[in-house]
Length: 154
Image (cartoon, rainbow, N blue to C red; front, top):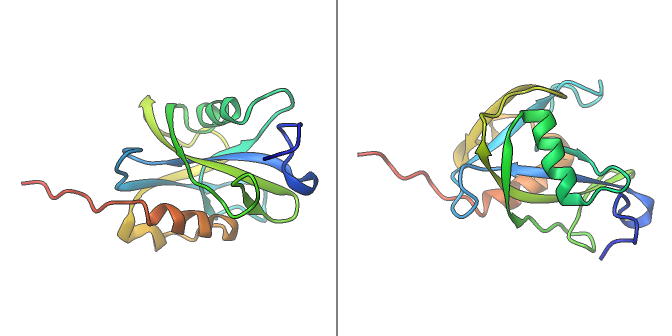
């Protein structure tokens, strides 16, 4: 799958983790988008929250830590969103590759604490209402295929 070093992906790329934060991991109808504040070349772009896997840290521990730091919530991890690279990762340029999971909040309310200044819940029809960072677009398309339409309220 990956190299023996859990912080590295293929070809020496840094491994990062991403959370496709949805309202229900079994039957998602909404996805949370987060607007970046830094670095400058990514500021204003929308992404799935997450971050780098630290040395000595497993990808799942990194996912929980990053989401707690960035959004102030506790999560339950659902199924992976498999990517096209070996080990089911997603390419993020030449330096990074990302593991992504569907996740659901089990404690707290998401708020932009670190690295983001806005959050938006998007249903399937609104997924293209924000300018996703280029590397996240194919991931969002894959998640869209898993999303359900919201059930109308009586």
